[in-house]
Length: 36
Figure (spheres, helix red, strand yellow):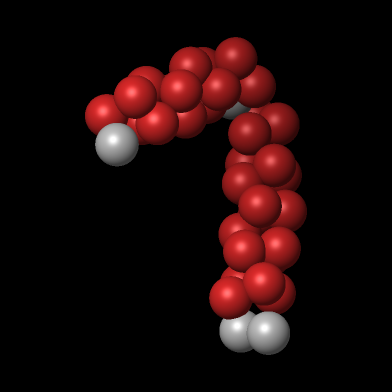
C-alpha cells in the first residue's frame, strides 16, 4: 500500500499538470469497470 502511494507520488511529481488528465481517465475507466 505504501509502495503504491510512493509510485503515485512520483508520477504526480513527474507529470504535475498532465497527471490530472491521466487521473480523470483512470477514474473514468475504474468506475466504468466497477459499475459494470
